[in-house]
Image (tube, rainbow, N blue to C red; front, top):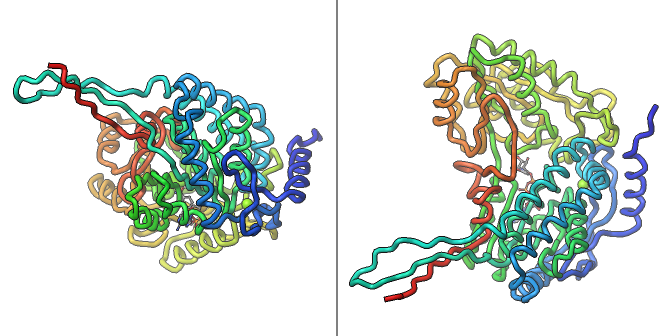
Length: 501
Ligand code: NAI
Ligand code: MG
């Protein structure tokens, strides 16, 4: 047996965590909460606490927002050259790469996901995100525009891009490190300063990321972190010193944020829930579709906003696909994420386990047929493990077809009429993403145009890249992350009119 390199790292990290409560990062200083309060963060694979984390209240939030404002106005940041911003972002990417294995293990401990998958997707993805946005400061500028003024005036009209200001970044627990990177990278590339609020379930990698940003040389106060519950996030959203909120999480909290942000009309961008359809035509490459549909719902234990959770397969092939996905689910190696053999970890919390279990109960009560899963796996009495689950013969109006389960549960429905297929696939309050499986180029592009979703994947699924915009139609959100669109989210446009007559 070869030694598992994750074990030693995990032991060291756990010792460190148990001994030292994690603190807030405010104005470049690590600080306990003013109240002295802390909360515990847990390992979802065992249900055991990992350590204590500072619990910020409105007072700490106020200090963090003021520190971010001071940093925003300080020439050390406000007059930094675009090339120097590029260098800082590249340096941060290099430091994440240096510590990649440790960050992956930390994510595994706090979130439960397999460490090797955390590394592949989250840590590598974060490095890529910082490197991509490092390229923007030197390329993100305005335009000169051919205006038509009255009265023979000669006008030079040009636009500039200015950083939006102090940004509150509120992120969830499903991809803790990536979600922090997706927001910090474009915000600081655009010249903003930020206060990051990680999810209470998974604060640890965001804190490490902030420590690396200090090491990279970001001036104090450019990146601040306040850990705490939903109330900590709410205090940020209400704070009059915050210019923008960028949020990823539940649609319910997204709506609360929109209401709470109205005080000073802060800018808001939202990346919310999904119930993404996978649409399979009779002519699809079935083996490729099965493998990708299984990964699209089971990866990260289904706790993915773009999870392909509604399968619409043509009547002629639905049984083969459902059987194939169920078989792929049964084959997944469930286990503690520190084990390099594990492919499928626990859900994030008991709360989430109960939620997913509740959906499975409702699916059965509504008459859908449970093909596989639906329970805790045998031999996993501790932690929040839930088996890969597949329902078929589901109806369009069932809860398991309409609501975001955020767990490893696929709901399959057959189709035969293409018009009805489009209507059903679009019959959702969400519009985050969609998958299309066909070898027919006409079907592929007609469907891509017809589906109301921010991302459409044809003969692939869940590919994400910082160069390509990401976000949702309908109640899946406001705005787009990644790409030029993300730079626009964190900046203002100024139009300048110069009379040159
Ligand atoms: P949540 O939306 O409550 O949490 C996300 C973040 O928002 C956390 O940092 C939380 O502390 C913060 N927050 C909570 N209330 C807030 C408020 N009033 N103001 C400002 N910030 C606030 O998500 P939760 O409760 O952890 O998960 C519940 C469900 O939400 C999941 O089952 C899933 O369906 C959905 N969800 C969707 C995500 C996505 O990526 N689309 C991510 C996480 C959850
Ligand atoms: Mg945790």
